[in-house]
Length: 232
Ligand SMILES: [Zn+2]
Image (cartoon, rainbow, N blue to C red; front, side, top):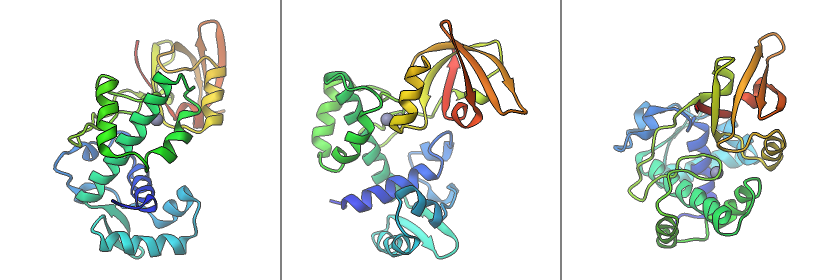
């Protein structure tokens, strides 16, 4: 079984590669050649470790055939690296949903718990949780849940930044899952499935003003970029 560190690296590389909206990611044949290379500095940032430890770990992952890595060229997951990433994400997201649905944990608390639990549960237990929850398609943040066969639905929707003013939207996915960010969304009425409308985009200030119910909120571009919406 891969170590906790291995799983965290593989997951980080997968997510830095732009999990969102990359059709190549969904190909079930796991063709790694079309993927973007991830910079080692970005991995160091994401995992809060030194570039030196990243380099050392990447050699280990390369020896295990989980990544393709050449110094100064960045990193790509191999087909087996992708499979591992999807298995870890499957565990993570099903645990999040389980905690939220059976223990009523709020969406800003489940991620932190799942970060620990995802390395401790077996795939067999996760399959049982999957069946218990009725084979759900997405987790409490709207992230699609990889299936046991390793397939994953393509992301749908568009960022709130790209959504036209005046048109009603429904929030279906949140790309930043830090507790602070999610609590801010809750306070602004922006929970998953919330329906709202954009009053305007202000390109010079890089803000988007939304109204949800009778609550008006001004969002920075940074925030609006993390919210995925669809037609209501
Ligand atoms: Zn999640």
